[in-house]
Amino acid sequence: MFRYIIAIIMIFSLNSFAGTKIRDLAKVEGIRDNQLVGYGIVVGLNGTGDKSGTEFTIQSLTNMLDRMGIAVDKKKVKVKNVAAVVVTAKLPPFAKPGTKVDVVVSSIGDAKSLEGGTLILTPLAAPNGQFYASSQGPISVGGMNVQAGGAGAVKNHPTVGRIPNGAIIEKEINFNLQEDILTLSFKDVSISNIVKAKNTINKLFYNAAEIKNPTTIEVSLPQEYRGRFYEFMDMILNLEIESETFAKVIVDERTGTIVMGSDVRINTVAIAHGNLTIKITSSEQVSQPNPLSQGQTTVTKQQEIKVEEDKANLIVLPEGVRISDLVKGLNSIGVTPRDMIAILQAIKSAGALQGDLEVI
Image 1 (cartoon, one colour):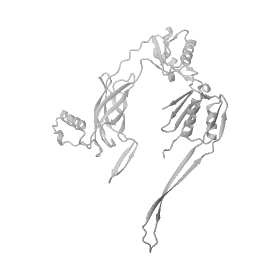
Image 2 (cartoon, rainbow, N blue to C red; image 1 turned 90 degrees about the vertical axis):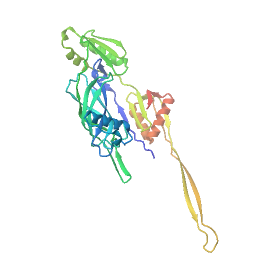
Image 3 (spheres, rainbow, N blue to C red; image 1 turned 90 degrees about the horizontal axis):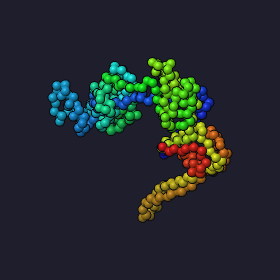
Image 4 (tube, rainbow, N blue to C red; image 1 turned 45 degrees about the vertical axis):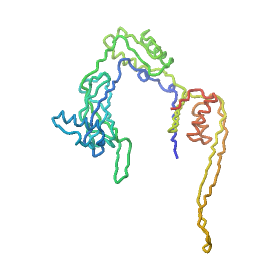
């Protein structure tokens, strides 16, 4: 039977804290990570690599050996100790040549595990096709795939691994920042947050901040900070505001996870919820004839149907109650995660939920 696990996380209002830093709500436009990707092969596997029918793995192996001056017939190559992989990494902003970053290695063939393997030198390119890093090294896999005698055990995902500091940056990406204007891009559309941020900045630097659109603020560099752009950026990003919270309920029906924001309110509503359980039991009974009779042994099936209905308790939640009261009320009638999801959807359909209900 599928078992739900419920996690009800109450996110309390940020008003009870000192505030939220602007750096947690926005990013500086023009400063970002860049994605890198490459194709490589992993060697040294203990028979858990791609099968012989994986043509691209065989082709990659023979091409590598050809570059090393070793001519081989690909029809005679076996790749059970080799796996074709995709290597991904993030290039941090302002990373200099020689900087090391982590990489993720993922099998793209039918390899069973990358445990114990070593990635051969793999160039990593950006979407523009230019190479910015190279990766190589032993792979750390947080899982296993063990098989013997037709039985086996798999833990986590053994076909994906990491190489800590496995890539070396070869070329730097230049960021052409306009050092007389600081542009802040907010992650979420919140008019309240962007207005509060602008007002907070202008209290410190008169009329330096201007709202360009619902997610962007431009801050002009004051005269006293000429030549100290990054000091000014750090000061702005560390300013605190009382950020807006959102009234939202997130429901994941696959896992039974429910996340509710602290600003969720409900109108006056009465809730009654009960479960109906129907059990059908089938059993077989053997009928033996009398030893002196000429009867035959027969098997008969008997079915028993049992219907159980839980007693439904009715609770009334007054208007404007907080999420803690809602959870306490639902727990008082002994609801399960599946029941709680159904109740929340019913409350939303009744128009009593003051907030958004999002099912993922």
